[in-house]
Image 1 (cartoon, rainbow, N blue to C red):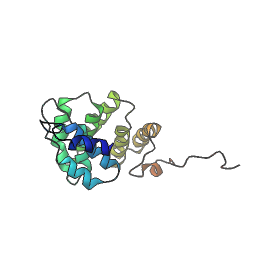
Image 2 (cartoon, rainbow, N blue to C red):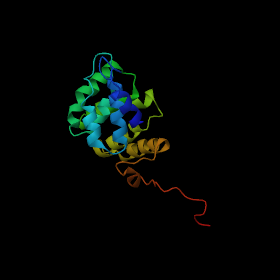
Image 3 (cartoon, one colour):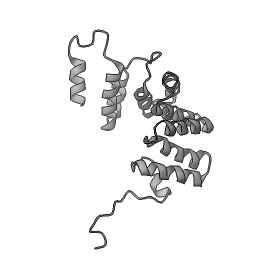
Length: 176
């Protein structure tokens, strides 16, 4: 995908009005997925600023993961204002609220994200973190983590051990 996007961007005259921001963001997301954060950040710097009616959840996500995550708040608010029914925008906004120590606004955004797209795993994980470490409600945190675990076993913060889950899948020959 990276080669295809880079080839499309490099083609002379392909984008007379400038390379679409979504294409640049997609390329940056691919580099981010490969763990090439510096390359993703460099590519992201090419992305145009959000415009009214032009929400950018990928831009918010990459900014949150980048060297200046504190700058994602304005982007998240803009994206949410443009597309309030986007679960990704709600989740990203919730993260910016949590980073600003506004746990109640974060909870509201994460819960809204789970209503808009119950299959999106991230908001459940974020709710588990919020309940465990910000609101100190272990029972609620465990419930949110269980809902997350039904959707994904990717565990970037090591919460599985805290909530008694295991990433180990048992094999047919185990115990035989």
